[in-house]
Image (cartoon, rainbow, N blue to C red; front, top):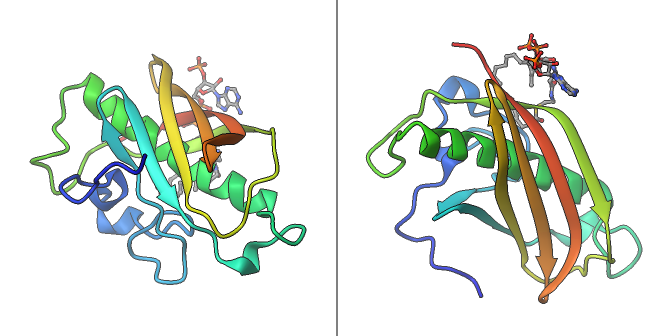
Length: 158
Ligand SMILES: CCCCC/C=C\C/C=C\C/C=C\C/C=C\CCCC(=O)SCCNC(=O)CCNC(=O)[C@H](O)C(C)(C)COP(=O)(O)OP(=O)(O)OC[C@H]1O[C@@H](n2cnc3c(N)ncnc32)[C@H](O)[C@@H]1OP(=O)(O)O
């Protein structure tokens, strides 16, 4: 079920402008994917519908694109979970003082991901250990988990 994100702020829209050029999720990159990750309770969610040019075999999505959007959903989720952990409100903020980069990303491709449908990405916090944030993710299409991911995101120093 697609949740209503209209009244939620995407974590990527709270990155300061100078850190918002990421190809996958930067709001300041007009050529990029501009993925949006939302914190909803204890999990994160994002939606993305790939364009047909990101085809692997006809009818299925290219794995590199799947890795890209899970990468950005993972770092966004990590930042959101740190904010939640430190009671930094995402509702009132215009920017957040937390930015994470990917140190390690693992994707398991479980089923072909169909082209032409909206993909749902979810993230769950596994642990925060100092600057290291581990997040587990799923990518679902038509109710079927097509890929799972795990990411180690590192919180950048001030
Ligand atoms: C993208 C540029 C990255 C450069 C970062 C610098 C500034 C950038 C500023 C803003 C970034 C803005 C936008 C980012 C855009 C998009 C985000 C989307 C996701 C991506 O597309 S992002 C691109 C791909 N990403 C990289 O380009 C990272 C290259 N890398 C590094 O820049 C360093 O490697 C870094 C910063 C990761 C850590 O460096 P560091 O000096 O801050 O910290 P350190 O090495 O001490 O690691 C701390 C603890 O993490 C453990 N650890 C580290 N790596 C591990 C691994 N692979 N496996 C298991 N554990 C690992 C250590 O073992 C230690 O653990 P412990 O504390 O327990 O000892």
